[in-house]
Length: 252
Length: 252
Image (cartoon, rainbow over all chains, first blue to last red; front, side, top):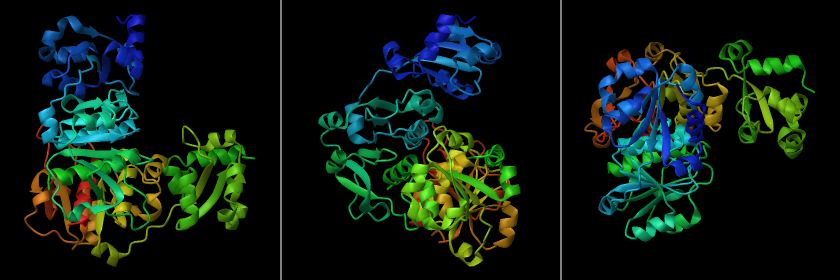
């Protein structure tokens, strides 16, 4: 049985402030829960699931026996942030920030400058995951990565991609030699780059409405354009433009 | 004043069946309304707007004088499908399908095979618009292009990009020589294509969960892979993978 107090604590984890205070976040659904259990990269604090799901996943759940709580569909609905709750909800520990400076200096990373839409944020994490980008840095103005809608849209990418909130200036102080690449309306054509692009650096993705901050643009080493907009289109979706940039730079 | 009956008719246009029966659809918000008025490509049937918006846009609205109805915020909320209604709602005529066979035979077009998510559909239209792709064909299993959420996510792209519902077989019968390109997990690497890709054809984008139908794959002339997934990621978001494919094929 789910106590009222417990239900309240879990529901409150929908808020960023509560997640930070408790050091916990919530993930939901069979698919992501399965990945959390098999990859074992993020510490699972508690598992709330329908009895049928617990029975089906007995083997995977063995070492969590004292942290599994069977709930009814009504109880799951009470703590779920999904319109249609999906059998299991996990409370997990926010992973501590772990910078591997050597990896960051040798890889492409993303810097998200004010991504607001949870769907876009999740989709960007999923893209990073697909192209083996290990780090996604987020400006403090971004939607929180541990927001349930972001995690859902990421399709489990948050388990493999490391993401941290950090101001651009602080990141540049720590990695002063990392090339910075921004996309603008008037930059070099991505599909006809005159200079070879390095195999590492920060690829900056701007806010959905306002693009990239002026101070980051001023600091950029590479200014790139995804050519288009001839018919009157104003812009690409932020997650799509991220996918185009990353796919091309990683595979150049 | 907005009559109850009128409000009901407009609200019903949220349903595909009603849109087809009436030959009408609804678009909302200042930005898209402004584009509808300035581009003048889609026939506007009626305009419902706050008085302040009508006053601000007097010049653009001149020739619609007998089709403008000022409404209160409460009345707008009643007919709006947005959480926060945005000053103006237009009822417009569904544009009749107009195939320009010569253009289709000479261009890239998209064929969407069961895109379900309105956000993805709208984002794909926006991508087509950016890369000057004039036609987006949709399988009958797709979410309807004239769904309000699709139009909103398209950021006005539906005004410039022509989209029709058509079964793949019927399209192939009409354009038998058009090359068909699908993306699969095991195809040719998009970033190292061994054969030159034509400058026209159907780029097929599959359903979010199930990918592209087996019969379309069997019919494909080009089978392409967006390389990735080394860390365990299962797939890219459909709209992102569309953006990567289109950007690369258009700019090869």
